[in-house]
Length: 184
Image 1 (cartoon, one colour):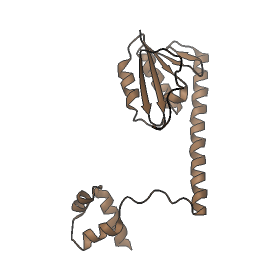
Image 2 (tube, rainbow, N blue to C red; image 1 turned 120 degrees about the vertical axis):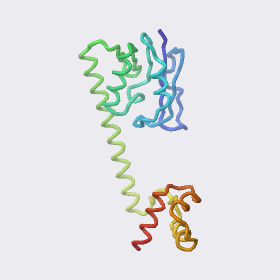
Image 3 (cartoon, rainbow, N blue to C red; image 1 turned 30 degrees about the horizontal axis):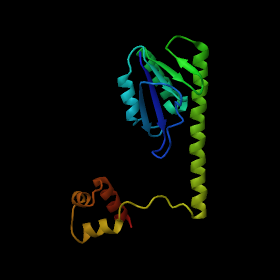
Image 4 (cartoon, rainbow, N blue to C red; image 1 turned 180 degrees about the horizontal axis):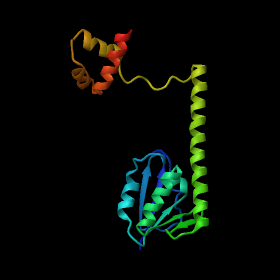
């Protein structure tokens, strides 16, 4: 029976120190990725590592998952392997035993976390729209030089595959640019 920690922060510059502070674990798995991302190598490694009788310690529910479906699925996977999950901030422990009140708490907290994420995304979209209207936000710089692609195709007679290879971009991007140029 091993106590294992799971820590997640959204960006590489965020600090992980406050999570699981004072909790003694034998091994810690740390992801620096969005909670909504399915690409979390440490979480996958944790799922492979834990065995029946182990306990996974997580600072809070939103560190494990950002939507209710993912949260329930992960908990089912852990408890299905005989692994307990402890959420320290919410003071909840899940062992897989049928506890209707705990299940209700989990679903309410998970739904609130999912709602908060949706609100954050909505505010972000609104902020970007307002910035665009003010002419402040222009998005990221184009990664493909349209004039360069056009010149390589028309002046040098290169095929889309050759252009893509020389520029280190996807062939579909070259086709898209050439299609836009043809429409002009």
